[in-house]
Length: 141
Image 1 (cartoon, rainbow, N blue to C red):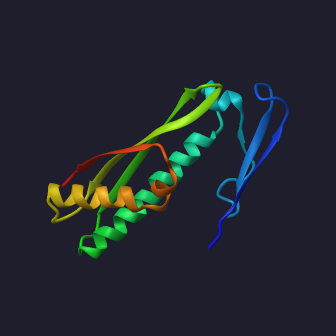
Image 2: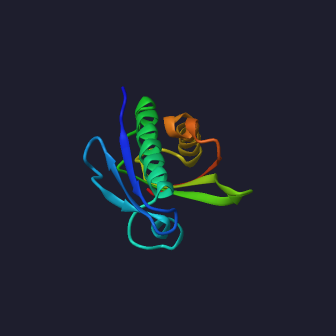
Image 3: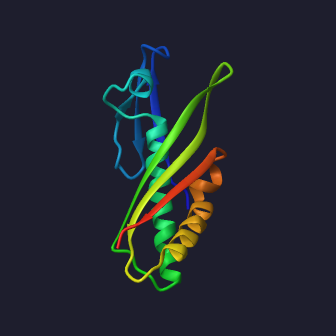
Protein backbone atom coordinates (compact mmCIF):
# COMPACT_ATOMS: atom_id res chain seq x y z
CA UNK A 1 0.00 0.00 0.00
CA UNK A 2 1.35 3.40 -0.97
CA UNK A 3 -0.24 6.70 0.06
CA UNK A 4 0.89 10.10 -1.15
CA UNK A 5 0.83 13.74 -0.25
CA UNK A 6 2.37 16.69 -2.01
CA UNK A 7 3.65 20.16 -1.30
CA UNK A 8 4.03 23.19 -3.55
CA UNK A 9 6.27 26.14 -2.57
CA UNK A 10 6.92 29.55 -4.07
CA UNK A 11 9.42 32.17 -2.94
CA UNK A 12 12.00 32.52 -0.19
CA UNK A 13 11.86 30.78 3.18
CA UNK A 14 10.47 33.69 5.21
CA UNK A 15 8.39 35.47 2.57
CA UNK A 16 7.38 32.46 0.51
CA UNK A 17 4.24 30.42 0.80
CA UNK A 18 3.12 26.96 -0.03
CA UNK A 19 0.27 24.52 -0.11
CA UNK A 20 -0.06 20.91 1.00
CA UNK A 21 -2.42 18.36 -0.55
CA UNK A 22 -3.21 14.71 0.09
CA UNK A 23 -4.09 11.97 -2.36
CA UNK A 24 -7.43 11.41 -0.59
CA UNK A 25 -8.40 15.06 -0.94
CA UNK A 26 -8.74 15.54 2.83
CA UNK A 27 -6.24 18.35 2.38
CA UNK A 28 -6.35 20.25 -0.88
CA UNK A 29 -4.03 23.19 -1.36
CA UNK A 30 -3.96 23.83 2.40
CA UNK A 31 -1.72 26.86 3.02
CA UNK A 32 1.53 26.67 4.95
CA UNK A 33 4.58 28.85 5.31
CA UNK A 34 7.17 30.28 7.65
CA UNK A 35 4.48 32.34 9.38
CA UNK A 36 2.21 29.32 9.99
CA UNK A 37 5.16 27.26 11.21
CA UNK A 38 7.00 29.72 13.44
CA UNK A 39 4.66 32.69 14.00
CA UNK A 40 1.31 31.05 14.83
CA UNK A 41 -0.49 32.44 11.80
CA UNK A 42 -3.53 30.65 10.32
CA UNK A 43 -2.65 27.64 8.18
CA UNK A 44 -0.89 24.37 8.78
CA UNK A 45 2.70 23.21 9.17
CA UNK A 46 4.62 19.96 8.86
CA UNK A 47 4.83 19.40 12.62
CA UNK A 48 1.09 19.60 13.23
CA UNK A 49 0.46 17.33 10.25
CA UNK A 50 2.93 14.81 11.65
CA UNK A 51 1.20 15.12 15.03
CA UNK A 52 -2.23 14.52 13.49
CA UNK A 53 -0.93 11.50 11.59
CA UNK A 54 0.78 10.08 14.69
CA UNK A 55 -2.30 10.62 16.90
CA UNK A 56 -4.51 8.90 14.33
CA UNK A 57 -2.11 6.00 13.78
CA UNK A 58 -1.66 5.44 17.51
CA UNK A 59 -5.43 5.55 18.14
CA UNK A 60 -6.06 2.92 15.47
CA UNK A 61 -3.23 0.71 16.78
CA UNK A 62 -4.66 0.98 20.30
CA UNK A 63 -8.13 0.02 19.05
CA UNK A 64 -6.69 -3.03 17.30
CA UNK A 65 -4.72 -4.18 20.36
CA UNK A 66 -7.73 -3.64 22.64
CA UNK A 67 -9.81 -5.80 20.31
CA UNK A 68 -7.22 -8.57 20.50
CA UNK A 69 -7.86 -8.62 24.26
CA UNK A 70 -11.68 -8.50 23.79
CA UNK A 71 -12.03 -4.83 24.79
CA UNK A 72 -13.89 -2.21 22.76
CA UNK A 73 -13.34 1.45 23.48
CA UNK A 74 -16.29 3.78 23.84
CA UNK A 75 -13.86 6.55 22.94
CA UNK A 76 -10.16 7.11 22.28
CA UNK A 77 -8.94 10.72 22.12
CA UNK A 78 -5.25 11.28 21.42
CA UNK A 79 -3.41 14.58 21.17
CA UNK A 80 0.14 14.54 19.80
CA UNK A 81 2.47 17.36 20.85
CA UNK A 82 5.42 17.57 18.44
CA UNK A 83 8.53 19.40 19.71
CA UNK A 84 10.68 21.22 17.15
CA UNK A 85 14.01 22.43 18.59
CA UNK A 86 16.94 24.38 17.21
CA UNK A 87 19.68 21.96 16.20
CA UNK A 88 22.93 23.57 15.07
CA UNK A 89 22.17 25.49 11.90
CA UNK A 90 18.71 23.97 11.51
CA UNK A 91 15.90 22.35 13.41
CA UNK A 92 15.02 18.83 14.52
CA UNK A 93 11.90 17.15 15.82
CA UNK A 94 13.18 16.02 19.20
CA UNK A 95 10.07 14.60 20.83
CA UNK A 96 6.46 13.61 20.38
CA UNK A 97 4.22 13.41 23.44
CA UNK A 98 0.99 11.46 23.06
CA UNK A 99 -1.73 12.54 25.49
CA UNK A 100 -4.39 9.82 25.54
CA UNK A 101 -7.83 9.84 27.12
CA UNK A 102 -9.94 6.76 26.65
CA UNK A 103 -13.14 5.23 27.93
CA UNK A 104 -12.97 1.45 27.80
CA UNK A 105 -15.56 -0.62 29.66
CA UNK A 106 -14.23 -3.38 31.91
CA UNK A 107 -10.51 -2.65 31.65
CA UNK A 108 -8.24 -1.96 34.64
CA UNK A 109 -5.54 0.73 34.70
CA UNK A 110 -2.58 -1.66 34.54
CA UNK A 111 -3.94 -3.53 31.51
CA UNK A 112 -4.86 -0.24 29.84
CA UNK A 113 -1.35 1.16 30.30
CA UNK A 114 0.26 -2.08 29.07
CA UNK A 115 -1.84 -2.09 25.89
CA UNK A 116 -1.32 1.66 25.34
CA UNK A 117 2.47 1.24 25.64
CA UNK A 118 2.37 -1.59 23.12
CA UNK A 119 0.37 0.63 20.73
CA UNK A 120 2.86 3.47 21.20
CA UNK A 121 5.77 1.21 20.26
CA UNK A 122 3.96 -0.62 17.48
CA UNK A 123 2.12 1.98 15.45
CA UNK A 124 3.86 2.52 12.09
CA UNK A 125 4.43 6.23 12.68
CA UNK A 126 6.07 5.57 16.05
CA UNK A 127 8.45 3.25 14.26
CA UNK A 128 9.50 5.89 11.73
CA UNK A 129 9.92 8.79 14.18
CA UNK A 130 13.39 8.80 15.73
CA UNK A 131 12.51 11.44 18.35
CA UNK A 132 11.71 10.52 21.94
CA UNK A 133 8.04 9.49 22.07
CA UNK A 134 6.33 9.72 25.46
CA UNK A 135 2.80 8.76 26.44
CA UNK A 136 0.35 9.87 29.12
CA UNK A 137 -2.59 7.46 29.24
CA UNK A 138 -5.71 8.41 31.21
CA UNK A 139 -8.54 5.92 31.53
CA UNK A 140 -11.98 7.47 32.01
CA UNK A 141 -14.65 5.02 33.09
